[in-house]
Image (spheres, rainbow, N blue to C red):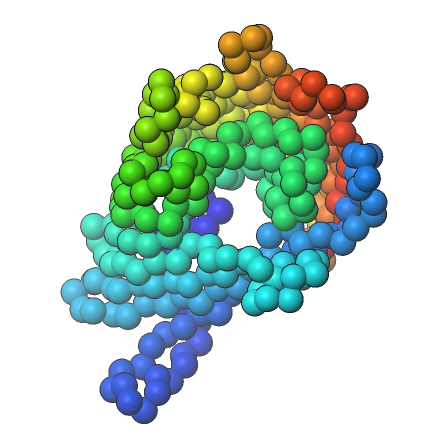
Length: 337
């Protein structure tokens, strides 16, 4: 998982105010990811974009007997917007409290669903113009709105009750109940159930997710059911990955399925990457396709700093006014702290 719920490493100690008797361990972390972007879409010029920068605070308290209290506060940032409100108008990300021990980890709060986390490792252009769920941090879906993985299902839930198991011989699972899945449908009556199983053994990874989102009472609409499976294998310096997703009643009425294939080749500090995928969207009128391909290069300046360039092209047949592919590129730098 891009951000393990179990690995809450503690670094640094901050003294609590004098009114409190105890001290708390706090780790400050984050990512700054800013790029230059250009696309050939109408009325879109060269721009500076913030590709999902964020800052977070997390920590734990030893409760004895191998049990820990854990917490996290994570906030999105946007350094490229004219919005002068706090953090560039961005909102909370994964923010929760919970308990962790030999039984696994349990938490309540706001967090990526297990369904979202199940295949995130295969999103090799994540948080760039070619993100597999429709582009990130760079305006309204820059590559013609193409999402290989349904962005509606790949959600961060505000009202999650989640459990993450220990790892047994490379396998672990996660489950969550979302008391109101407002990210997918309006109203507080929409609930979701999300499951994921993840396996890693040497060069092989196999991951699966399943999610049910209850209908928000739309006339004639059914519950949305989504499943996806991903697999990856590393051959020396070359890594390949594939993801398949099927979503029934993704908008309450129609179905969609998609597949993507990715590859990455490491040459020391340089990593070459490529991705291709297609989504088939069923409607009452016809079957319509979305296609996306992308190539890119990462250059590791250090363990925490990477310069990158990404070029991609997306085509969405659903748009009656679409005059062809929309292509574009990012050239930026990502620093983790």
